[in-house]
Length: 220
Ligand SMILES: [Zn+2]
Image (cartoon, rainbow, N blue to C red):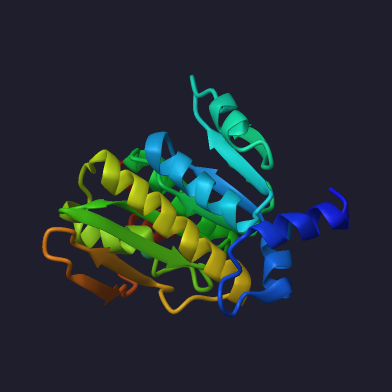
């Protein structure tokens, strides 16, 4: 893409307050790792694409054809990779998968490599978001999950759409500022009541990711 093309692309975007040309450039140069499926995945990809992120690496599992995403967003460069222990380099990862095993596996990988990630999932009548740069390993997603196993539910299509775009928005903030006020917190929004709460996540010795690292046996 030439710089004239890039300029033209930016001029068509809504320029958000506080973003500016430098911010747009950071987004344009970012590579977002995306793991998930269905509506949440599409919603996250649309939000990233419309704000000017140009490169996405999709972590795909068996029987997943990413071509629909490529045709929906021709301006996006989409690379599809099978999940392995060797993740490519990326700016921030977004995990909107409904698969609890995949979420845990990615949590352990990001934790081990200190890679920034945003997780979003349906919770009660709304959704929850967890952001970490894994600077100290824990707190991690599993520190929260092991003490709050019921904070994960199944979401409607509209909840999936919403959490995909919220995860993308948090990712853009991380790329822009290198950090986020939501780091190491779980942010839960209940749609029935409109109540939104943030919980600080405290590292726990019960964390399965930490126990595995310490050589303990953990039932999956
Ligand atoms: Zn942990």
